[in-house]
Image 1 (tube, rainbow, N blue to C red):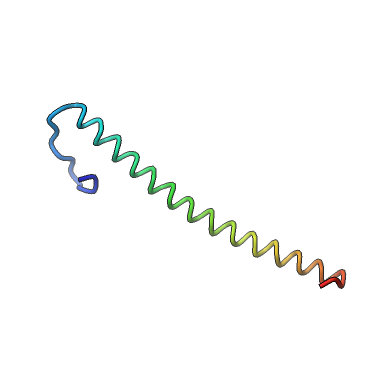
Image 2: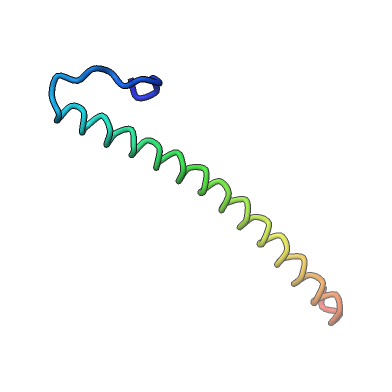
Length: 64
């Protein structure tokens, strides 16, 4: 129902309001899911870069 390209016919304005609200919530949830995946990727990349820098600095000091 929420995935259909055309909204169903409603018997009341309350049904229409609920339908629109659920559709907006689903779209927001999808956007947050995508953003979360992007942020996880960024965190992994930054963690890798930081780890490499720490290792590099340790090697320069002769500690690693």
